[in-house]
Length: 72
Image (cartoon, rainbow, N blue to C red; front, side, top):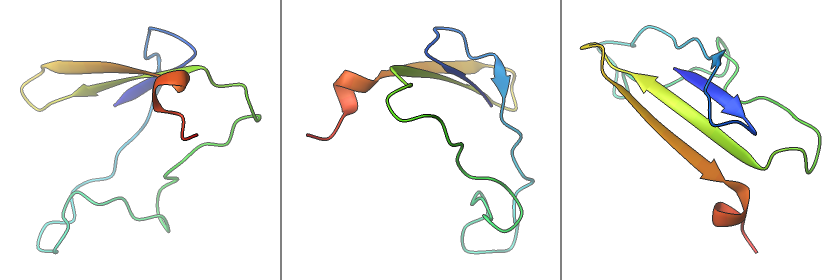
C-alpha cells in the first residue's frame, strides 16, 4: 500500500503486517505492533491519494479531497 498527501501520486510506502491467520480478524492492524495513523499539522492536508496493490499485481487507486469528506 502507498499513499500521497496533497498529491495525485501515492509515493509514500505504508508497510502492512502479515495476516493474523486463525484469528477472528486476520487482516486487522495491531496498534501495538504497527503505527495505524500519521500526524500532520492542522489544516495541512487538502487531499490524500491511496494505492492498494493486490496479490495478483493489480492496483486500485482512490483520491479523497478534504472538502468532499469533511464533517461539518
